[in-house]
Amino acid sequence: MGMTMTEKILARGAGRESVKPGDLVLAKVDFAMGHDLTIPPAGRIMREQMGAEKIWDPDRVAVTQDHFQPAKDAASATLGRLTREFSHEMGIKWYFEVGQGGICHTVLPEHGLVLPGELVVGADSHSCTYGALNNFATGIGSTDLACVLALGELWFRVPETLKFVYHNRLKEWVEAKDLILYVIGQIGVDGARSKAMEHVGEALKHIDMEARLTITNMAIEAGAKNGILEFDEVTKKYLDGRAKRAYTPVTSDPDAVYEKVFEFDVEKVELGVAKPMSPDNYAPLSEVAGTRLDQVFIGSCTNSRITDLRRAAAVLEGRHVAPGLRLIITPSSHQVAIQAEKEGLIGTFLAAGAAWTTATCGACLGGHMGVLGDGEVCLSTTNRNFPGRMGHPKAQVYLSNPAVAAASAVTGVITHPSEVLKHLPAEVA
Amino acid sequence: MSFPKVLRGKAWKFGVNIDTDQIIPAKYAIYSLDEKELGKHAMEGVPGREGWASQVTPGDILVADSNFGCGSSREIAPVAIRGAGISLVIADSYARIFFRNAINMGYPILQSPQAAEAVAEGDELEVDLEEGIIRNFTKGDEYRCEAFPEFMNELLHMGGLVPWVRKRLEEQRRAAS
Image: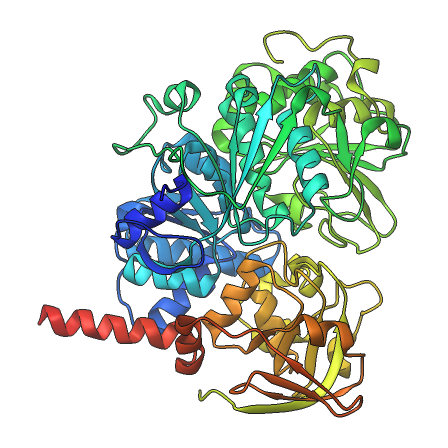
């Protein structure tokens, strides 16, 4: 019987010829990640409770200071310090200091640390992001991470795989974000619970790596264990000159078994949003256009890489944020910020009246730099809009792509970007 | 920590898709290393449940509908619930990371669609973890739980992933010497 990509990676990690859905396996991990909220508990569990003195392989661990950093208060400064001390004491090679890294899920791919065919875990739910690079990547807890740091292995239940086939091409203005919001709207926030989402089809050929990362990033919003894409020219090009290790891509066998196959004609997918208070509350933009906004946030591991910022800047160029609304733009990494500076995007944002911040998770999880108050309405390029995610439980959060967010910041209400800018310039589309 | 056989407590009832930011709002992640402090704010993000933790009697049981614990991977979600004094969680189904985290902590967590549907807030429950039976004294009902796979059962009985790793590290040290 054939295997899916996900099954092949888990089988290799477990040192077995084959695995099937439902099997519990102990598998070797190729790369692990933790950050300022998950390293302190994992480090303490590993050293004080498990009795491990060193980590299994300092070259295969990355640590970022991203969630509450630069420290938002004294308590988060302590978490930052514990994260820093642990990383230095363990000799972790890929430690990213404040002002040099950014959000883990942007930093790891851009540094070529998570590669095709690999088994990757991260103590953060959006670790599924890396699967766009043809690997098995999944989010784990702090005790899990402690186990991986100590032993380099972890238990997994082999997931059933759901296959998503995308035909045709996305229309103008419609982005990978709209596609994944639409898919989650179709299957629900538990539609892929504990399962693998395998994304294939010709539509993906026309979607660049940064946008692909947006698709796999939101696998967790459908409850999935991982999201994975095939290896192709786009993957290879992205990794050339970037990959830090040799790698071996995986493909699903022609006779691999899928629990279910979903087919989508992506040309029919409309520009859309997830309405409050759940990522599966999809609506076409036309249904919510005109909704008054207090804040627009362009940021997060979902939609704040350089291509996202270019689209936002194209919409904001020569325009200004609407009175009574604040626009907060948080690049997802330091490299993204450097590139944005080179291209003059930051000047565009500042001239438009946006608050430009350092790279951090920030407002996405209601941490700092854009937390919402009681009854406020926000349009956000992030991934999750459950009650209280960005601050007050009664704040209303809509999720969208960056061009919609930028256009809506200009008008003060949810707006189709074509009302602000006729066409997106070809070089950023 | 030995694994309890029978637990008894009053039920607290929650709905579908309760995510980790409702279980413990992210702003309390600054207390990641303090279970008691986290416990004070457990379920605070669920609309209408502000101040819930102060009403919990140690040993109470939390019963939820489907996809409980979806959202973030933060282990502080099950830690906060345990810190609030909840002895056991029963749900129709769980989001996977929440489920893993609870098992890894050696914290009892049961899947029972039957109980999730039938139990009402305030019902007096008794749970036999060995038999996988939930008894509802208020309603005079009995519900079955889904059985754990062997390895998870082993983890739970050992007290979670920590003792399992300790054992494995000891084996590695013995083999090396």
